[in-house]
Each structure stands twice: as C-alpha cells, then as structure tokens.
Length: 373
Image 1: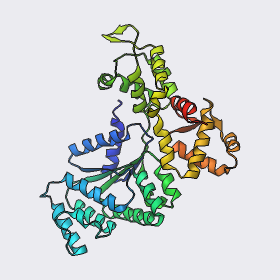
Image 2: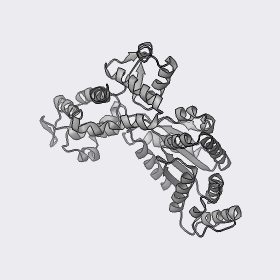
Image 3: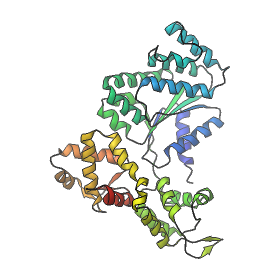
Image 4: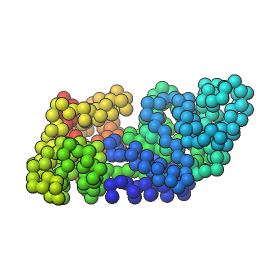
C-alpha cells in the first residue's frame, strides 16, 4: 500500500501511451525512490530505462555528456547504437574524437550531439525512456548563467522530444519547474509535458509504511501503535512524507505492554519522539528547508520568503493573504502572492479556507524556534 504501486502503474501506463511526463513532488516524499522502482518495473518488461540526476548541472554540455554515459552503461558494446552514433559524429566533425563519443563534446554543438544520440537510441529497437531527476535545478542553474542560452537549449530539447517520439521522457523535481520556467520565459519549452503530481502519503499509507517489517527493522526500537495514537502524530506532522515518518519512528522508545512480542508505543512515547527532533542537536534534520530557500530563490525573493515564513511560524492557524501583505510592506502585494505560490509549490506551505500556514506543524515549530528573527 505504501510502495506507490498505483502511482507507478499510472506513470507506466502514460509512458506506454506515448506521453512525456513532468512529475513534481515536494522534498522528502520518496520521489527518487518511486522513479527508481518504476525503472525496475519497466526494465522487467523489456524497456531500456536511462536514469539521470541533473541537480548541480548548469550547462548543456554536461547534460549531454552525462546522458551519453548513462545510455552507454545500459547497452552492450556490440549494440547498434554505438556504430550508428559514431557514424553521425563522424559526419558532424569529421573524426578526431577517438573511440569514445564523449570526447566529441566540446567539438560539436550539444544539441547536435543529443540529436545524434537520440536518433541512435530510437533505432535501437527497444522501448526506451529517459528519467531526468531534479530538472528544475538544471533549468535554474543554466538560466541564471545565460537566460538566452537556456531558452535556446530547452526549446530545442522540446523539438528533439517531438522528433524522436519513441523515446519517452519523465522529468521530476522538488522545486517548481513551472515557476522557474515562468521566471525565465521558458514556459513554452515544457508545455507539452503531462503533469502527474506525486503527493505525500495519506494516513492509511503512512500507517502501512510505519508498520512494514522493513521500516520497523530500521528503527532503534521496534514498536506497535494504535491507529488513534498514530493519528495524533499525523495531525502534528501534517505532511506525511516518508523522511519525517522515519525521523519520528527512529526516536520512539516504547514503554507500553507488549503485543505479539513487540512493545507498544503510547501517545506519550510518540509525542516525546517529536520533541526530541526539536532539540538543538537535531537542527540539521530540518535545515534542508533553509538551504532550499537560500539556494533556489534570487536574493530579493529569498528575503521576502523568509519574512513570510517568519510571520507564518508564529501561529498554528497561519494568516490570511491581506494580513501577510500588510506585514510585508514595502513588498508589493503581488510579490507576496508570488512567494506564497512558490512556497506552496515546494510543499512548505498550504492554504486552507483562505489561511496560509505551514504544511507541517513540526517544521513550523522548528522554523519558529531556530529560523525566525
């Protein structure tokens, strides 16, 4: 139930139907795990799956190089791709690159290199798909260096996807691709992608995850807990991401009566585990959110985002938009709305009945205690 079987089946069906997919997902909810398992599912059915993490990349040359390495790693040296690809490269640059196609990067335009690579891959005769993890980081890094260069490259990449339609693409990201693309005028480069949003666990999936033998074996102390007591924990977590469920579970010290040979974790035990996570020695468990804002927003947006989060951390109930806008003067009202859109897209904030608030009570408490001015 917690292994994302339904989501994996849906993604597989879409890829089989010829769709290219954008799968945004907030941080820490098992995005990379899900696509890794999807890759295993599809390889068992004869697909050639290339998995590529592009976080930290900021140039098309690096993208082309890494993709080539990954494709080479998936195919035997005798595969037809090698001869076909090399012949195309010879035609482009008349030799001089040795025996490894990667040596041609820098001597040939990266889009032409990718064109040759995808043409050869499509002719390989197997169903194939390229899974690109953290695409928004690559778009952001490239566009910050060269907005025009990024615009040219990603629109050409879109054209290649249309031309070599037998090669499917799945893009994932923990920051909003749509928001990054809009900021740099790149929205049209990704308009053809089918959006599939990976959500956090619901309560049933979270219980299944926590009770799974593999999960329990990874904890410091195995435990059982009632649905009602787990429900109180889930309410405080708010956002049932596997990462935070594991953090809490690992700190549980069960003190109740044994059931089936395993001690019961009481509600007090579960709440004590959450309190442990808010000690100064555990700040690094949540610092990813501060780093997320510092690394992925321009300075003007970064400062405003911090002010908004500081305001929201003061209350479990959050704030309405007009109150936030008034508190953020001299920032323009639209700028505040845009920041809230970004924070919602990233999974840090949600809006219920017109009130913006932290999606997780535990993360709110961390922010209030350690990040707010």
